[in-house]
Image 1 (cartoon, rainbow, N blue to C red):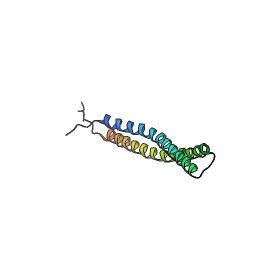
Image 2 (image 1 turned 180 degrees about the vertical axis):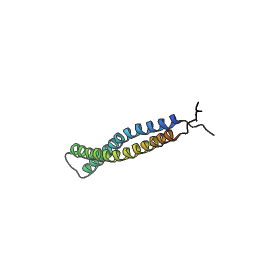
Image 3 (image 1 turned 90 degrees about the vertical axis):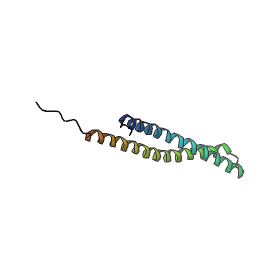
Length: 103
């Protein structure tokens, strides 16, 4: 049976926090590019003159939507990290201590 190591749990929580920081940026960039490209191609198909403006507006909308989605996803990841750390703290607080003989 593997031996209990609390450092692994701490590393897991650290990785969750790092992942939460990246999630917001990833969602914002991905949806910004997607919405910008979609708006550009739809404007091109509709024969709009200001393609770059429409693409920029689409990208801005995508960034906002991506930021909002990423923020919610990051919150869920941070909550999981906090639950993990809470369980670790509970274990530390309730760990049986060796009984020392009284003199």
